[in-house]
Length: 380
Image (cartoon, rainbow, N blue to C red; front, top):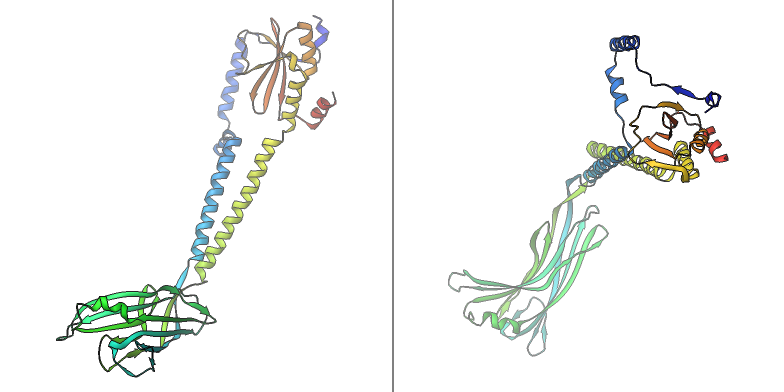
């Protein structure tokens, strides 16, 4: 082989180390030990976050920030206090008593209750609040059948019949309104009172309001059962009350919760955007170094073999470094040997051709790879 052929390459000869060289190395080691080491800078150089680690850290941070934002947002929405609101509640009704002979008697009359066929009751409930609020109020119309001991008027039994099951009261402006008409057929009470006909029996038709998990009677009509010349007892309501409602309150705490929730949400969105861009950039786009390596592998695919586990030489050879892949290809053509591709790490790879005593090497590194190098490869 001609000696002039490789004047442009740098040759590294692996000679046996002399005693003087050993002494120089020792001096260099001693000098290096005397250098001041900045522990912070040293640690910074040692720590390297891989792409996978960066993605995992970003995802964990996004989840934590988003969870914190949701928690604080929940605190804002559910930060309530009890507010007392005045309202006027009224419940009145009209009724009609129809006898077995198909005649109907007016209100406030005396009746032979044994001749009553049906009783119709038309309830009207109204609640006027001093301000518009949202309350979950329901109503029900219930028939209560009671039997009392004649001697001491102690309660023997009470049975309940739901004529109108629980229903929501309609919202009207600043209040709530309900209208309900029920009809009670007195024939159906015979079976209930058949064993207590000699006791004091009564039927009460009541309008009940369910508010704050509490049921209360606001109007009722009581009819004695099987009594001669009896009066019906009417009870209605018209009074002022206080409603306790939970309302959302904006104070210092909710303001801070809201600000922190907004900040955490914005930061999590920014992280999502940046992480998405990073993933797309890494998965969809190759940098200049990666593109150049891929181009070389594609162009010289037929003469390149890949060292899957990296290249290791078992023989001591003289190392000749070449500046371009083309020079290595020429050497390969002369020697008629394959080019070995070895990936050192993510930012460095080597292309090698082995001769008996010489190892020809072309190194590609991301650090010193320029746009000009890429253009040269693409133009070939």
